[in-house]
Image 1 (cartoon, rainbow, N blue to C red):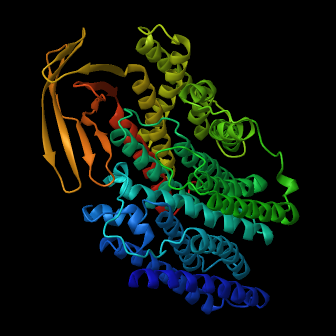
Image 2 (cartoon, rainbow, N blue to C red):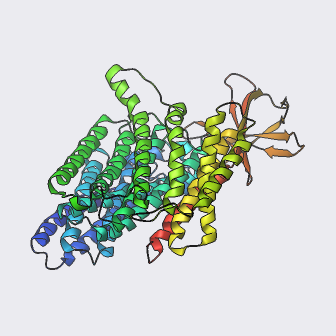
Image 3 (cartoon, rainbow, N blue to C red):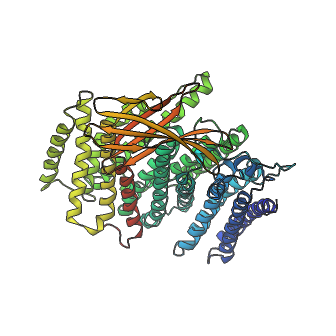
Length: 626
């Protein structure tokens, strides 16, 4: 109870400091000869207060303080310590407190790291960030207080959703939120720079670091979520176009587009309006994701809340931020007319712009596929779900020119270029097409589209691979990121083309056999852990080449809440994953068995790490590409 009291009043004090900071900021803006050091001190104090509040919630979970409603709803005395701690942010209230913690951390770091920036710019960025912070303080205290008191005090809690009791998901939200909330600094900075008419090459170099930081964390956060869904949910894949997967992908697409636009702005004073719009859009999409998840509108394993009051608050807050952003953009932004439309058709900036169009198209497809079912439900009460076929049909054909331009674009020069002495580009395209033809010639369905798609992915792969042998140090970060992306697309394509699946029902001791695979259900045994019991099925999988794999998937029966989950057993090699999951068929004495061979799964994860590595190298290198 003591922790709840301290945590609650720390939030109230933090809110009061936000109001104090805005007051000091206005005074300092009027007299901007020097930066008021009290502002930095109060920003640090605000961050510390939110840290104290967050630690109080963690301690409430560790000591199973069931007088705290959040702890009661999301914890249990038998839960392992690790999941008690991660349960702090595995719920609606705790995750929003984590949002607030990252918001206050980023503005504090921003003020420390921008000593050489104009004082008015720093102050305005602080003010816009504090507006967001105040919104989250009010939201937490009024509708989602993580320190609500329960009386009489229950003896036991309701427990945490078993599928959230996983190491990957324990670290997935904090990393994802660093990406989401990092976009708030880009948003605040862009509004401040627009208000002061200082969108320039210098500002682009400054903000690029923050874009890269947010982008890396968002990429790694999505990766962890994908890995978790792959082995924990038993879906047998890395991406299922689940609505909450989509709401993390949309800001990633906008942030990726923004990163490339900032690169152009850093070289040439163009695309200023587009950079501002993307800065606003990225954070808006992050907030939209928060609204959709927290309001309970989306029906997903990821959603935490189902409270219209919370959804209405976020919606009003979101529209207020959008209105302020649009007002500042239309009334304060002055486009640089002299450099508008000053693009040669064959140049690096032109290729970036064309690929930006493709990225915006992909974003639009994901946005429509995610939001359309919601609007249809509201207007007609008709419930539909938009699945992978919708996204594949609309995205895959446009992925081909996107990959080709991505391969050729980096070879062009800024301002004006030509393709003389680029014979190797044509040679590699021919080799890519020939290899693709040989790979898919045994497949009858979609032969043409698969051949062209794989050849375009191979083309990007070969072009970026060649760049490593040239070893231009100023381009190393770009080469790694683009090579990683080509490897990602190739791994996804081969994974989807060459995957195999067997679904059958088996009793203990039975065997299922196909022309290539023999599945033997040998036996079952039981084991007991602190917070669950499990039934382990032992299987022997024999391939056509005589190789035998032993796999042991589980069914876990959790004690609180009383839920049964399936735990896949996965054998990973460099070339493929062998994935086996079982489910108990109700009122029957047999199990539903699903066995999949998923090629190149490991390379999907490694390629995303390569992409992130490229961005990290770009972040830490001292001299940017010339």
